[in-house]
Every structure is written in C-alpha cells, then in structure tokens.
Length: 246
Image 1 (tube, rainbow, N blue to C red):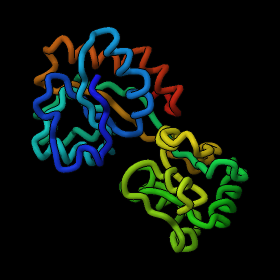
Image 2 (image 1 turned 120 degrees about the vertical axis):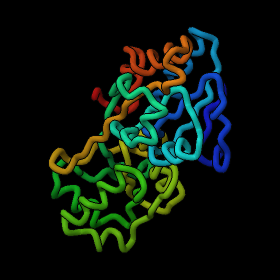
Image 3 (image 1 turned 180 degrees about the horizontal axis):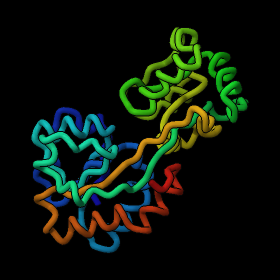
Image 4 (image 1 turned 60 degrees about the horizontal axis):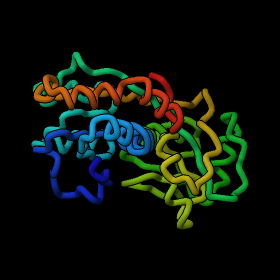
C-alpha cells in the first residue's frame, strides 16, 4: 500500500487521476481505513492503493478539476449532481458508516459534564477557547447549534477556527481548551481526551457512503477494494474508531 497522504501532501497536485487503483476517502474515516482496512486489503491482494484523505467537499473539488478515483467514500448524497453521476456508478453506492459530533479537551484536563444540554452550555461558556471548523459538516452544524442555544456571540468571540485537519490539534498547542469535531476525527489525535458525544437533543449524524467509478466497476481489483470498504472487516474497523453503523 502506498503511504496515505494528508491534504497538505496533495495540495496543488493530482497524482491519483491516472492511478491503477485509487481511493478518495473522507477524512472522518481515515483512522479505520488507514489503520485497518487498507493493510488488510494489501495483505490479501498485494495491491498498491493510492489514497487521498480530505473532507468530502475538497474531494469533490478534485473530481470537478478532473481527478478520477476508482472508489469514492464521502458524505451520502454528495455525488448526486450531474457532474458526478457521469463519473460514478450511483446504483453501486452503499452506506458504510455514520459519525456523530463529539467534544475533546487537552490531555490531563478536567472533563466537564456535557451529558445534558445545560451541561454543554456551561462547558462551552466557561471555555477559554473552543476549536471547531466552519468548512466541514460538524462545524457548520455546531455553528448553528451555538445560535440555537443563545451563546454564539459569547463562544465565537474567543473561538479558534481550524480550517484544515483535526480540530483537536488546537488542544495540544494551547490555542483552545475544548474541541468540537466528528468523533472519529477527534480520535485521530490520541493525545487529546474525548469526553463524549454531544447530548442527544443536539446531536447530529453524518452518513458516509462508498461507490465505484463507472470506469472501475468492471475492474476485479477495484471491486475487491470496494468489497473490503463495505464488508464486515470494515464495519468492525469503523465501530472501533468512533463511527457507527449507518
């Protein structure tokens, strides 16, 4: 398996557009895919996979610019525009996992009680700075929740906006003392302490699906990788890395 690349590694380039076996995968699934699924696939087949992990929106931008991955794993429904239906075999689109939004604090920090909405409000209001993203689905939703809870101006006046990568990194360098992100993305930073999901009353889930490109659907190796991404081994890997069954 070729070493997986981060967004910064791939910026300004498109090395996978002509790859024999290429995968575009939402970064929320990275821990499961990079740590378990692709190693198992490579052990079984010996095949090299050229993989890009980025938020779904950035993956779509690459495709619009001409990239042609064999397999795409991103937010369910994101390929429904005509520009993408010409590239991907949507009848082969299968939900694989969903992710809720969680909260993390720095290592060794006291963990506030966020099991209730009132507890969450208290924790967010008391935080020196809350790190979140305004680009991904978790951050967009969280921004709306802040307004609904009536604390948007208070929290945003001292928030740390993370435009790229896991928000939990802001906990390690001191920029923030609370981070909001998909649970699976918080787990990409093992030094941070995940204190739990948002309370059920304000929780939001994002579903991810896998699909083959039209060009790859008759390719045995690509079909095998698709089976790995959607099979029981993958389901277990998703559960072990903060994701849930769709």
